[in-house]
Amino acid sequence: FNYGEFQFDVLKEVGNIGAGNATTALSKLISKEIDMKVPLVNIVSFDDIANFVGGDEMVVVSVYLRILGDVPGNMFFIMSVDAAKSLVKELTGIQPSQGDFSDMELSAISEMGNILIGSYLSSLADFTKLNMQPSPPAVAIDMAGAILSYGLLEIGHNGDFALTIDTAFFHGNE
Image (cartoon, rainbow, N blue to C red):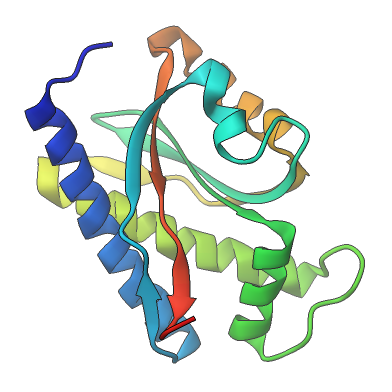
């Protein structure tokens, strides 16, 4: 793996554009002003990717899409359980259940992840002029190591690194 400074700057710019589009989409989705922290773009080895999201055993909520077309791969939107419950409340106006997510809550998470990942993917496809089509989304709630292993296992023969775009969304000045 060896990207030069120019290629890494291009990846950062695509991350910024994608995050901006995702912020706009999320803002429209919940009808509230949303801002974002400038995304941190990194290239992380598959061995370290679970640590990037809190460790192998950290329970997370993930929306997962396969990318089909010119550049096959996978995209994950990963968040903490608390962040997912907060987003469900914003999307539905209903306080999330205390235990497991209901079918309606999982559907809201899936749709929100689909829109946010789709915004990133659309930006990447527009920027690179490559054909990249998303599969339908899947939602998983499990330990980060298990979720990431599923998505990375099938593409591991093509490489050993993942592009991570760490973005924080928040209301106004929160």
